[in-house]
Image 1: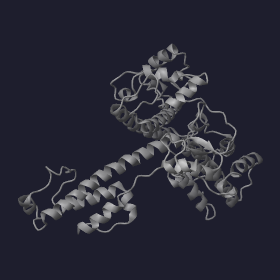
Image 2: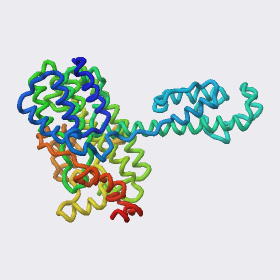
Image 3: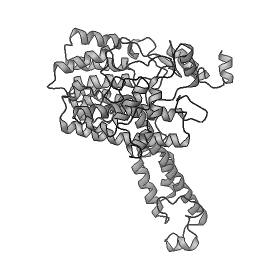
Image 4: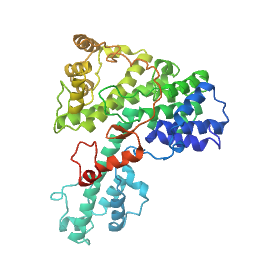
Length: 457
């Protein structure tokens, strides 16, 4: 449990689950947490944390990173709420935080709409406005047509703004879940019940939130030697570890075996709902512009950002779902419904790079191309049993178990720690000040360089 000395640090670590802090900086906070506890760390854990924290921002000369330390947040409705408070007597002035709360925004729209005889959802400027007689009947005949139209237009814009906020909030959640699983959804009291648990979750989440690098090889693995050292502490004190919290981010058989069936089922239900949510996003992106399924190479008109975020979230949710089914002894469900993995879209230049270096399309792409689309499988429109997945994998010489097509992901071996690079559109740059200058100049963006960039070059 937290103490007056450790609670501020635990709060900061918990806040980091919804931010994009560098793993080095999280390692530094974990060092502070153990110091505030007066914990004598074993040599392996202390050495591992020191190796990472050495490169935290507080320990480097510039103390600066050019990369954002948060996920993109939607622009709130603060301006619209302030305007509504001026135009509608029934709407009070609200704090800025209300502009980021969809429930409060909707409540204002409904309340203000009632004052001019407008129902929520009436957004057609030609059909839904009231004429003079209807305004009189609704008790708002004292408002001029001009003033009524002004209020109607504001509420219509506010409904559109609310829809955009909800969409962007869902997209942000999908992005965070794809990279950090359910860490961002952990309540503070569950997260902070055990400091060792909190330290492991915060560090692994920060590793998961790292950005992708522009490369023709594999991306950096999440589970590294620092995570392994922190997990060893959990193994050493299993009776005080909150394994249920750990299962939100690290669903290995070792971890899930320590979680009660009730909590496993709770996680399974949550991941099942999230799979359906992400499947809807994938379907929406597909319907707007069907992809080149046989290659998954980006073409003009493809919304690669939305697709890749949703694909990563689908694969993360699917991995947790498989692991939980296995631990609960319900693998037989996969005999009836075994939705496949979803590959990310690849940029044409990266695909060319792969070919030039002797590579080619990943075999998983061919398996994906033959299987039913995942949203059709979840809705029961298409059948995708485990036997079908195994047959398609065999046809393309893919191991369905090792490739996590019909089984949970294999347990990852810890990799060596490497410093988090400064990235400019995925390209590593040694110095953060240089990275900021390159980004401002439009270098590596794939777009035509502006005048400032040409002058800088």
